Image (tube, rainbow, N blue to C red):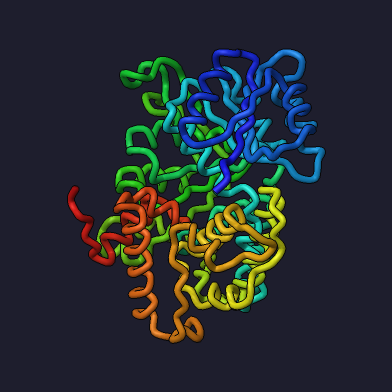
Length: 440
């Protein structure tokens, strides 16, 4: 698959060189600019930019002015700001203008690469919520009705169905749209760090707390907080979160002063929280606080009639981005796509089509092109609609995960990437289906 291109904008040549080296070692193509003016000139020349990483404070044209000019265009790549201590307010302003997210210095390389991967995964994924099936029509109608309300929302659905996109749609349609939406991946951090990220901390409250830190809940004041994979947080953290939802106050770690915060909370999970409650791993009172309204995203196998439209949209998008003259699927390929189980859902379909376009040799996408994605597209004649035996679909899903693992020499991250799912999801599926990983 063609490399994604990252534009790095920073007036410090050492920072540019450091980020360029880091991103290239991560498999990305990199172009650089010394300020916003140079970045706009780079974008104007074309060549395809998938993501922009920029500093806030730069001479000639700073990050905010660069973003203001950038958003005047019809479309633009997602923008991540790197902010120094004391410029958090400017970073929040950037998010109001349309930035994807920001990362406060000093940051770890892992945090930066995780944010880059997340931004690239969600760039151009508006089609994930497209569809004319009855399941999608019902879900989109609920989003329209709920967006303008202040109610908390719980979004449920399998990995790859578009839960974060639903959250962004709810935020965009609310009275809070002019304020930031802060995304918090609850599964990415241990409790000790998650508490500091959510609530902030005072200088000296623990060994590495060398300065005061504003928590993400405070940063989102007036806007929306999206708690992704809420089921991953521990019971003690659930208690702190419940207390915040009850009184609307945050207290930084090591501080005695509570602060009032006005945010709308949207949470998402790919687990059945009722089962988690029965197992004692999730608080029932927190569940009822979060699920004032529940939006359930259907898996792709339950809306097969949407697959041709989605696949054709992904093909057109990939052809534009990769500058390939591919305009259609060869005969029979769409039928085959419709009969597939798609354990990674719409995101997996998007990745498979994009890989096919990158490797195509003609104007039509052939089955052979799609097979190079590392995922075997095998027709299943026994699948007629979503009501046919779920146990059979689970067997098919297990088989596809096994094929992906074998094709990747049992490297789970590579298998997850080929399936269009996260490492966390493939770990869960491996445990669920009792797949044994050979010892090296």
